Amino acid sequence: MSGKRSTFSNRIGISYVSKSDMRKPSSPGKGLISRKPLIKIRRVFRRTVLVYVILISGFAATMTSFAQDRFPKPEFETDYQQPLTTTPEPRSQAWEYVDVFLLVTALSLASYFALKTRSRRSLFILMIFSLAYFGFIRRGCVCSVGATQNIALALADSSYLLPVAVVAFFIFPLIFTLFFGRTFCAAVCPLGAVQDIISYKKTKLPAWLSQVLGLLPYLYLGLAVLFAASGSAFIICQYDPFVSIFRLSGNFTLILISGVFLVMSVFVARPYCRFLCPYGVLLGWMSRLSRRHVTITPDDCVQCRLCEDVCPVDAILKPTPEKAPETRAQGTRRLAIMLILLPAMIIAGGWAVSRLDGILSRVHPRVRLAEQILKEDAGIVRETTVESRTYRSQGKTVEDLIQEAMTIRKDYQKGGWYLGGFLGLVFFGKLYGLSVRRKRTDYVPDRSSCLSCGRCFLYCPKERVRLKNKTEGR
Image (tube, helix red, strand yellow):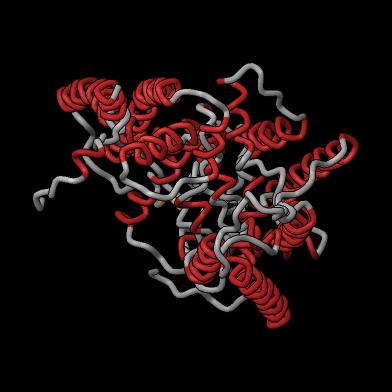
């Protein structure tokens, strides 16, 4: 029996040690233009008040969470009753329709303000409403970012039923982005709103650092889909850096993460949106294909470079310098290299991630339970857990659990090929984008990364002329 368990434990990444071996002594082992103060004192005062309100709320939630986490985990064999969960209660179907209606209305207004009226003030007011309703009133749930996991689980498990609100919050922002650009990010997403409101000073990151950090959302999206589809975890919701602010509660770790992102947001514009948001990857793809997109200037670009200085997310593409045209031989050589690199990167990425199945599969609770029980039987750990005691009380064999864990690990190995192939394709796309330069004569927004926030509008001289003519009735 011990030999069989040893085989199973080694295959799921656990070193089996018998009790006799435990007695043996083990051997030791080995900005070019400064930002001009165009914002009035009244607007600065309003933002300062909002910053203090958010920070005080976060501090109060931190103290509450710390007071709750000081005490040891209770014994569940006693009459202890679990406290109420901090997860919002399910809404009635009528209220779900109200949420969807407000979402579509907010998306419509954001698109109108960004493309038609070109009003940063209107976008900011709508941003306050989105933060208040979708953030604090709805307590960050349901969220378009987190809905990605529900969609992944529904595609992998046909027995999982998707609520109407979850489907709507996932689909409608993508549809609007396909037609009007990332107006959802501009003033509807509460996660982006809380970062935008407290943004005070733009800190320009080095181009190479932005490129490297820009790969993290793809990795986060791939892992979130893999864990959700396998039924392991919803990591987007579990580690949402702003949900503790919206719900004014959470454990100490989550509160600490929220505080870090809040401080970063003051100096680095929208760090979560730019360098972590998995839903932003999907929005970026849709925005590249958008029928219409926000423009920096309503007229011809005068290349004053003010938009480049004020853009908080570095989403302004510069004019390309004149260079000698590429010869036919150079183009053919570059195309051949790309055709060789594409499958090589996909296969290499898939193979590398599939080898991590033992590490990734530990996110699944059944695999962790199998590891815990094997360690208990081998004498590696002395204390049992609630989960292991519950499993043993059900009369099931350890071998059945190990077999289930091995099946899950095989699924992760297969999923690792998909995840690694996806990451290889993304890395190839980044290299291809750096090697190919499209000719541009003016400063234009990058459709993929531009959040349509409208900060560049009032810095454009042509926009000022347009507003002046509009005021004078011309």
